[in-house]
Amino acid sequence: MDKTLTPMSEQIHSLPAMVREILPSFQEAAEEVLTPALCSSLQSIYLVGCGDSHMAALGGELAFHTLAGMPTRAMMALHFSRYTVPFLAEPQTTAVIGISVSGEVARTIESVRLANKVGAVTMGITGVPQSRLARSAHYVLKTSLPPPPTAVPTPGVRSYIASLLMLYLATIRIGEARGFLSSVAVKTAYKELEAVPDAIEATVQANEGAIQNLVTSWKDAQEFVFVGGGPNYGTALFSAAKLLEASGDSALGQDTEEWTHLQYFARAVDTPTFFIDAGGRSNSRACEAAVAAKAIGRRVAAVVPAGEAVISAQAEAVLPVHGKVREAFSPLLYGLAGMLFAEYRTQLLGEKYFRAFGGGRSIEGGGGISRIQTSELQEEVLP
Image 1: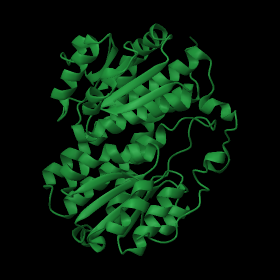
Image 2: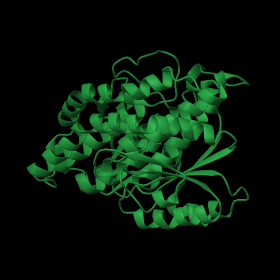
Image 3: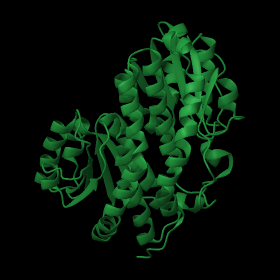
Image 4: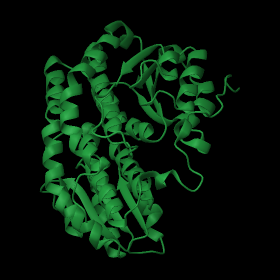
């Protein structure tokens, strides 16, 4: 396998420097937008997005509960805009935060615009201040990034981490502004985020060789399953998405509990299955599910804290995460293994990212015929 840096691996290796660079400006943006008056006026929050942005929303939900002290729900943009907006009970005290790196994803724009019509407070997390999302939202949390190492279209890595980081900074700011977090708790949370770049470096360094070997060992596989609970259900979906985008492999992200109800009965018993668990609230169920997976013949990989023993005992490969962060922040680190696996699988198979935009696929308009950005916007709230 060619171990020279490719566009996706360059982006993965650039993450520590990127986080160090953007953390101060992102924190400043959150503090500027999320004033005490605004935060005190809110009673609930919806996090809305598509693709990686929805996965980031799932990864941020627990942080809003535990750091901001706010009832929060992460939702897919289509479900929110067309099936939830009409039924918001108290929209004037509800914040709808649309997440889109480009700011041009049609369903997310639609969600924010329809939320405006029912009187909700809307915010956009985007890297493009002049985008339609930014122009549609009442407030904008800017996630502009330094230029990537290469301009080649690459499965989103940096943008996903940036969205997560802004969500976490927003939760700290809201918790502080509402008096939910003490000054000590605020400082502790910021210090955890400041330590993330070192943890990313250590985790990537510890896992690259093992993942290259694992990719070779599992070359015959036809499908891959990623399993996670809570915020790392989002990580599981994100890991599967990177594999689909990078190598074109069939990949599935699944909730830890749902795996035991569904995937447990699949005909192909040796499907590689990654258990992603940060040792948090869903840990006991992940331990049980990993035992079940090994018992039925699954090839198990464990993405777990360094030194973890229970899930690791069931695994063919252990991919340790270094650095201690609370479960609410763990998606910043626990998606690294999936990124690396997708990149090295792509190299091994000689595939091109995004199927080289062939077979009727197109890069134009944010997805060509799939119309991610050019899809028709619903203009009225459905009854």
